[in-house]
Length: 402
Image (cartoon, rainbow, N blue to C red; front, top):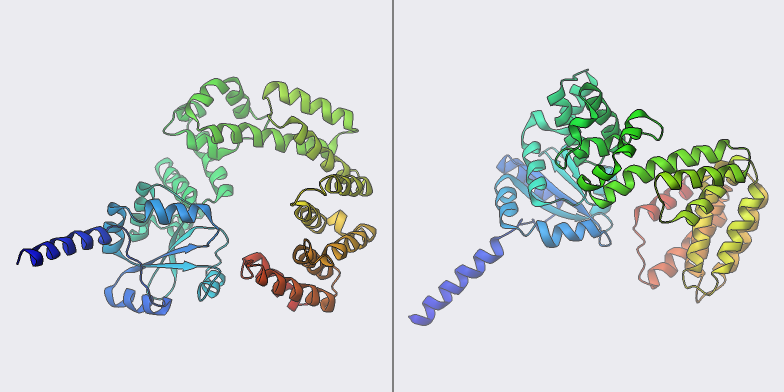
C-alpha cells in the first residue's frame, strides 16, 4: 500500500511538472484547425527555425513558464512549426513569414487575426496574446483605425505598441514622430517611455536629434546600451552615407567623418571610413575601383577559412547594386572567380556553385543557373546544409521562372 501511495504521489508531482508551460499539439496543422473549430479557440502558432537564436530563447526560457502555459493552454490550440521542414515550408509561404520567430494567432478558418515578432519576456507574450483575443486590439483593426485617420493620443500609443510587437520599424517611426509632435520630446526622456523616442529615428540635423545630442549623457542613463548606440550611430551613418554620395572628393568625406566622430565617437572608425569610401566610389561611377579594392581585400584573407564567404558577400553586393550588376566586365570577371571556387571540391564547391547559380540567373542563362544550383543542392545536402532555407527556395523559384 505504501509503495502504491509513493507511486501515486510521484506520478502526481511529475504530471504537475510536465503540465507547466505551453502544451503544443503533435498532429498536423489541419488537425489543429479542426480542434480550434470544435473548441471555439484561436490557434497560436510558433513559426521557428532550427538556427534562430530568439526562437531557441522562447522555447527554452519563455514557453515552459507556468504562467505562460496556464494562459495559452486555456485560451489557444498551440502548435509549433519549423518553417523549413515538413508542412512548415508550405505554411511559411502561405502566411508570408519572413522573420523568425513569428508568432501567429489564426482563427479556425485559417486566417491570421494577430501576430507578434521576435523574442520577448513572458509578460509581453501574454500581453500580445490578450490583444489577439480582443478584436479591438488586433493589429489589423488598429491599422485600419489609423489609416482611417484616428490620431487620438491614447490610440496612437496603443498602435505604437502594437506595431512594435510585430517589429514594423517603418510604421513605428512614423507613429512615434506623430506622438512626439502632439506632446514634446522631453515627456519621453525617462526609462519607461524612452522607446517612443527610440522608435522615432530622428535624422541627423533635425532639432529633435540636436536635442538628444545635447542631452546624450542623460540618454545614456535611461536607454539600453544597444538602444543608445543605435539611436546615434544609425543617424550619423545615414547622414554620412548621403554625404558620401554628394561630396566632391574623398578628403571632404573623411573630414566629415572625423567631424562627426568628434561629436559622437565611433568605435569602428576605420571600418566606417572604408565602408563609406565604397559608397563614394559607386556614387561617382568609379565601379572598377570599387571592384578591384573589394577583390584585393578578399584575396588578402586567402588563409582564412571564411575566404569563400567574403567572395559570396561581394557577389551579393554586385547583384543587388544596379550600377555594378549592369557592368558586364565586372559580372563576367566574377563568374571566373566563382568557377574557380566551384572546381575546388574541398573548400569551394558549395559556395562556388551557389554564386554561379545567382550570377547565371542574373544573366538569364537558365541552363547554367540550373546546373550550378543542382550541384549546390547536392553538395550542400551531403555536408548537412539547409536546403530548405527561404533564400535557397526563392533562388530555385527565380531560376525556374526564367
